[in-house]
Each structure stands twice: as structure tokens, then as C-alpha cells.
Length: 279
Image 1 (spheres, helix red, strand yellow):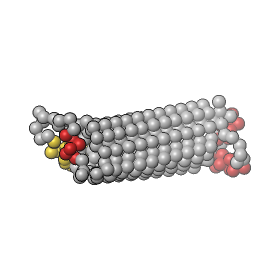
Image 2: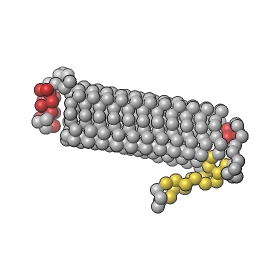
Image 3: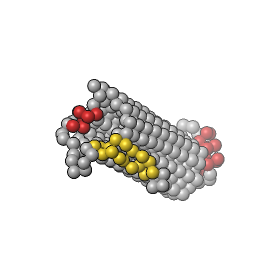
Image 4: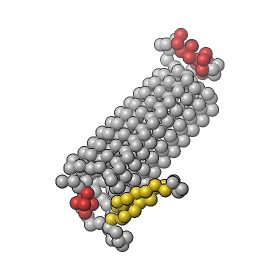
């Protein structure tokens, strides 16, 4: 349970709290299980604090410092964590549904099994972060740094990865169904056994990328960049599209030029790899 004295100090306001932290730099902060709903903690120094199972739903945490903080199982639903410092923070099993983490610093953070459904992580730094088994359904990861991040077994259904940098990331067995990866950098990424059904791969960089045993049925491959080191072994694909156009009115991508052209026909086993593999 939360330290009552520390909780009362925090409730006096961020300015008072930060000065108290500055005067007591070595004090262990325990705010576990604390109810901090809808509280304004903008610019607060919560670095290394224990916030296990704390309720921070709808809280304003703009530019808060949560450096190495323990937020395991914390409720951060709809919280404003934009530009927050969450470097090496522990957020395993945290509830971050619809949270604003845009431009947040999350490199080396632990987000194992975290729920990030519809969260905004645009322009955030998640390099070397652990997102194993995380739920990223319909989340916004546009322009996000995911270099060397671990997203194995993660649910990325309908995710927005426009212009994201995923170089050397691990997406083994990840679900990217209906994902938008327009212009994403997938160079040297492990996407073996991943599901890319109906995904938009227009203009992605997939040089030396491992797609072994992946599923591509319904994906758009408009001007995608692959090379002889791109692994397409045993890819599963009934059909794919050669062109993708964005509809500004409907705010959605439309795929065209189906392969095979006849909608009654599907590709034979191994045909996708033969058509696309670079020599």
C-alpha cells in the first residue's frame, strides 16, 4: 500500500512535491495502489517510484519523470503521458487504453502484456523496449522509434505504423492484420510466423527482413523494397495487391490490382515466393 505521508505530500501539489524530492533524493517512494485518478501531475518527479497497481486513469502526466518507475499493473487509462520520461520504466500488465504517450521516452521500458489499445504513441521512442504479448490494437505508432524493440506475439491489429522505424525489431508471431505500415522501415526485422493479412505494406523497406512462414493474404505490396536477403520461405498467401491509394474522403486505403486478377482464383502454394523473391 501507498506510504500515507508521501501520498499526502504529493497531494500538496507538484511544486511542493518536486522540492521535497530534491531535498530527499535517496528516499524510496511507495505509491502502490494509490488512487491518483484525474490528478494533475504535469512535470512531477516520480522517477524510481513504486506505482504498482496505482490508479492513474485520466491523470495529466504531461512531461512527468517516471524514469525507472515501477508501474506494473497500473491503471493509466486515458492518461496524458505525452513527452513523459519513462526510460527503463516497468509497465508490465499496465492498462494504457487510449493513453496519450506521444513523444514519450520509453526506450528500454518493459511493456510486457500491457494493454495499449487505441493509445497514441506517435513520435515516441520505444527503442529496445519489451512489448512481448502486448495489445496494441488500433494504436497510433506513426513516426515511432521501435529500433530493436521486442514485439513478439504482440497484437498489432489495425495498428498505424506509418513512417515507423522498426529496424532489427523482433515481431515473431505478431498479429499485424489490417495494419497500416506505409513507408515503415522493416529492415532486418524478424517477422517470421507473423500475420500480415490485409496489411498495407506500400513503400516499406523490407531489406534483409525475415518473413518466413508469414501470412500475406490480402496485403498490399505497392513499391515495397526487398532484396535477395529478404526471406519469403513458406509464406502463406492466397492473393495480394499491387497498388494502394489513400482516399482522403473516406480516410482509408483502397487496394487495387489483385493478384491473381480473377477473384475466383488463388495463388498456388509457394507461388507468392516465386513471384516476389529477388534473385
